[in-house]
Length: 235
Image 1 (cartoon, rainbow, N blue to C red):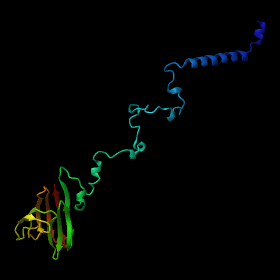
Image 2 (image 1 turned 90 degrees about the vertical axis):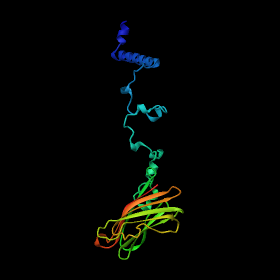
Image 3 (image 1 turned 90 degrees about the horizontal axis):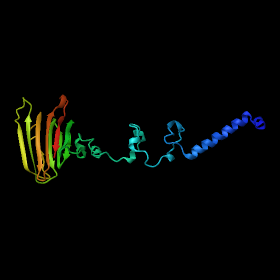
Image 4 (image 1 turned 180 degrees about the vertical axis):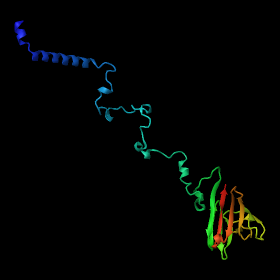
C-alpha cells in the first residue's frame, strides 16, 4: 500500500478521472442521446444547411407570416392573374381610334367623340361596329358631321336640337331605313350646328347597335374653328 500511495500523484489522479469521464461519455453516446435532450441552444450556428433539410420537409404552416417577400418570388413562375389580361387592352378605352381594344362592360363599349379644329378636311372621329363618323370644318367655320356604314341593310336615325335661342333654324330629325355601304348620312339633318345637340342611333339586322349623343358648335372661342364633343356606345 505504501508503494501505491507513493505513486499516487495529483497528475495520476486527474488522468484517471479524465479516463473515466471519457469512457462514461462514450458509453452515453453509444447508448443514444436522451429524448428531447437537444434544443436550439445545442445547435451550432449555421449547423443546419440546405443539404440537411429533407425535401418537402418545410410546410406552409412552418413559414412565418410575411417571411416570403416579393423579392424572393420568381415572377416568371407566376401565370397571369385571372382576367388581368383583359385589363391590358383597356388602357386606351377613352380614345375613339383605339376603342376596339376596350372590352365591353355588360356587353356595351363606350368611346369618346372629340373634335376641335380649324377649317380642314374630313376627320374620322369614330369608327367601330361598322359605323364611321367623320367631321369637317368647312370654310366659314361651318361644321359637318356625316356617317358611313360598312354593313349592308343598316338603318340610322338622328335628331338635332338647336340650342341657339337667337337662331331661326328649327329642330330637325332624319332617318334612313336603307343605310348601305357607299351611302353617306348627315347626322346634323341639315342643321347648321351653331350650336346644337345631336342624338343618333345606328342598327343592323345582325344585332349591331350604336347610339351616341354629342354637341356641335362653330366659331369656337371667337377664334374660328369647329367642335364636336360627346360619347358613343355600341353593343
